[in-house]
Length: 281
Image: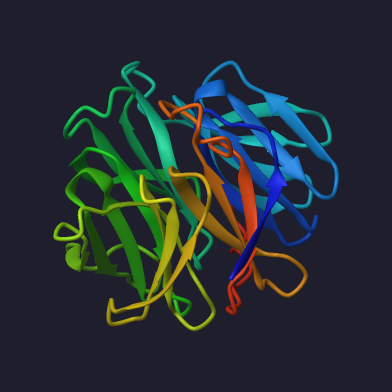
């Protein structure tokens, strides 16, 4: 496995990488610096007046973006953000965190306290104009991703070291309660963002471990990719044939010796991903 630095920009809390299949570019966020980045050979960024954390693509020039208090449409060509629905707008102590589009065109987003307070967050799904809370009393929602056939969603609470799996109905709504699927407590690992590849394997960034670990559909460890930044946060597949794994990281609370902390990486991992689903408003 070989990695390279895609962006030397040191994000305080890099998160939410998204490969845009129409623009052939990578987007990601620095949540705590209120910024969205794009890299297509040239790097550019947009600044917001509040935390931004995750996105799905609507079309070539529009993203659905989750902020600290709403979901809205961001027009990349005009640099304009138009709010759609409030997201815990009456709770200034929380912000959005991990999110991803599902195969049915919905968008899942988690919230959490700025101080990672226990049980202060929740998980929501936005679909056809409706924002519905799925679960509450979550501390640090992460690892939001979906099986290629759309039958299951994965979700983690980083604070518990558990990743759960939940079946979905034909419209993408949970049809049962989440059940523990991957237990990392014995290893002392903290599951952060995740993505599923074309074969259904689960690639999970593990906060504090400086790695992305791959698990098969039976939750068995099959591969580990190590990175020079200890706080890896989220992976995403992209590139011309979706065979490049992009990984964000965080510089928050790291030592000066962690020189690559907060940078964004790319790696060849011998696997291929799938194009992220289009969000349907």
